[in-house]
Image (spheres, helix red, strand yellow):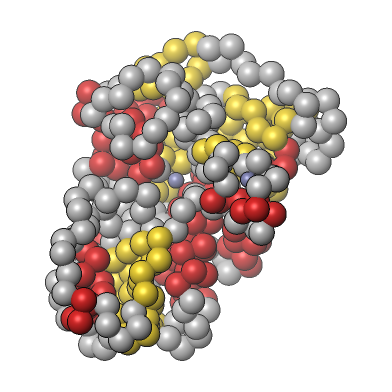
Length: 333
Ligand SMILES: [Zn+2]
Ligand SMILES: [Zn+2]
């Protein structure tokens, strides 16, 4: 099968993914073989490829996979051949540790990330344990569904962990694949949304999705926000977001890595008054299972820019440069 494989860590500018032919993986007990239709392109892939996130090598990246079941391993009964399924960042967790038993499998020490510690969807086929695959609601096309599996499901988790309530004001710092889904969720829940982002194009896009105010991270909004979510790779955003936050508010940081360190902050000015900071790590199956039907009900339509599998390096570079307006998706079949 055709696959895009990362053999060594390198800057995305060097086009490090190589098009190769590899054997089709065989589903083991409990697993399904999925013929990949599309796979989303995520910022996490930039971190894997450029070495900021520990990944197995060689690896087939990609963790927003939509495809159809073409074979099942022994004992796999949840899906039949031809069923459309999605695969997200959580490839597996141990299922036995106290985190897994408490519904926090995202924190499991044996958490395996799709396209990171296990091969992912930049290929014609992939395998996954059937318990870690999700039915895709009918109303979505394959391409529309891909961003829901990471940007969407993690965005849903971010919003849930922010503790925002109906009628409150949410601040979104940065406006990419995840934020453009979160704004639709938040508006559906009856929240006001302020979007802080540099690009005028991104601000216009936010306005078209119902943003109540837009500006840059340095701008002063018309009122403080009750909760905030930070999607930016810059450490410098943290004090700016805390400054915009109302007393008792919570700032959720929705990125795995910050490219720059968080600057020293004066406690009394930035954190006093019971402000909280919380990070988000990975997702649980429950996040994806709850979010997908909700996305269909609202409905959340994610805007996608399609590329061919052979253009994986180009799509990643555009993402790194901030030149993807919403979400990039690779078309495989
Ligand atoms: Zn992702
Ligand atoms: Zn565990």
